[in-house]
Image (cartoon, rainbow, N blue to C red; front, side, top):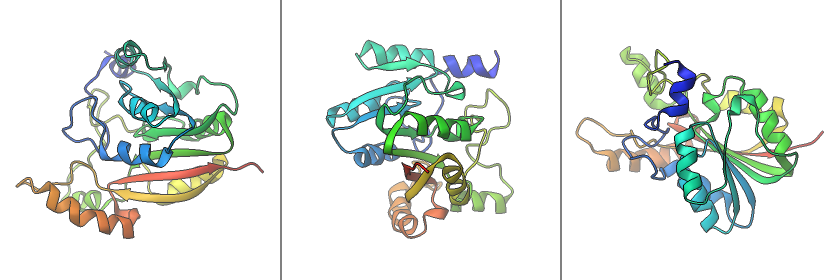
Length: 236
């Protein structure tokens, strides 16, 4: 099985920030992003999975659409009446120009080979001054720095195609986010830092560690596990 077929068929690939959560549950990052989207918008979720985030967006009185590469997840979402298209985001975004008020992408950007092309496509489908809300694992996270000091392999960076923790083809920090947005016609309004669901120690004291991490990451998002970015389309 090649890597493209694996991605089309495998429904067990973990989501960034989700940790051991079962497929279909919203993780903290997705809940945060839904809150930032707000209400009354036409919005598309890129890499929408089985559509649980779309359901939340619809509940918030938005007109929500989704794009997903995995055929099984597309089928699950469509069976629940959600508007989801099966498409490879490496080839573009299958919507017309200036169609959306908001585009969301939770844990997708770092899985796209040509991230600049993806951002240009997002720019194309957004209305003037539209919002692009996306999240990526942070290469410069405190946990990654500790892993490097220990000589361990970085999380979320698998060594071979079928490694379900290895779907990352691009790695981002705050500097690269600003560069990519600037080159693609976006102005970064804000970057938030969030802990991942994997922020726990061997004794499982996840809640304690997350309570410490949250204020630290609010103060210094550049060392957070997950970076959530709010960017606005600009036109020269």
